[in-house]
Amino acid sequence: MKKPRILVVGSSNTDMIIKVGRIPRPGETLIGGRFVTAAGGKGANQAVAAARAGADVTFVARVGRDMFGDRTLAGLKADKINTRHIQRDPKAPSGVALIFVSESGENSIAVASGANEKLLPKDVQNAEAAFKNADMLVTQLENPVSSITAAARLAKKHGVPVILNPAPAPAAPLPASLLKLVSIITPNETEAEFLSGIKVTDTASAEAAARVIMGKGVKNVIITLGSKGAYLCNAETSKLVPVRKVKAVDTTAAGDTFNGALAVALSEGRSLADAVCFANAAATISVTRLGAQPSAPTRAEIERLMRKK
Image 1 (cartoon, rainbow, N blue to C red):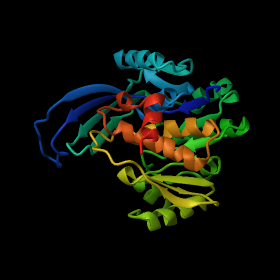
Image 2 (image 1 turned 120 degrees about the vertical axis):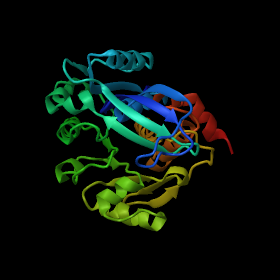
Image 3 (image 1 turned 90 degrees about the horizontal axis):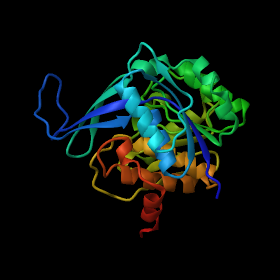
Image 4 (image 1 turned 30 degrees about the vertical axis):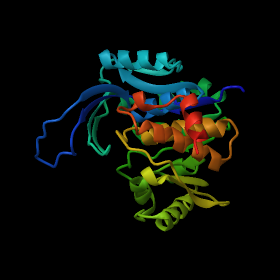
């Protein structure tokens, strides 16, 4: 089978992670345990997840001219990701994320965006050649919305479906001009509430939120619900796709792993429901491991989990 060609436009960070018993309260200092530095950033995580799930991946991004940028490029190349369209910013530093991970696997994250904020529409437009051969575009919201919109417009121009992971939840409503270019949107509960105005607490509220989002022009909505699975809604179906229960170690990048794997499965011709099952399996494996990109599973690992009864 020919490898699907996935194009990711997005962010790249270096994650600095401290494992703690629980997430600190405001003003509180906790003595933590293990400290780990790992490659991260939603865009880079999704690119790595797609590559390990079996795709040829091209990544459009911006990093600094610093040691973090050097490490990022080396790591992406180790996963055989095309880095030709990653710009090196001469002034802004590479993005950095500070992450607390509790014993239950929950996390609290603060990001210094750095060069990610400097990814401009012209940088995206300069990568147009990569859009011409892509099977799917995956993007998120850790870069300027204007740049994400430019990517979606180029995808539309070249007939490439768009997966938008609307994370982190934006400070302002997403423009209708962007949403109408999106083929599939993949918010979590918090992001779905932001987009719809409906608090997602169960499958009924997930469906209600999804239908509001569909009313804004997106035909397919997948709300990721953590350990409950993912709620899929479009004109043909509305249902919860459950996940296998596992003990979570770190939920960082579970959503990114889901999106990267989803893009691969869809580009291989699977139905949307089957693609969600594949993506659920990849995300399930990722939460059993510490770190963002280190947690992304290989294709063989995903298929092995899917074969289990």
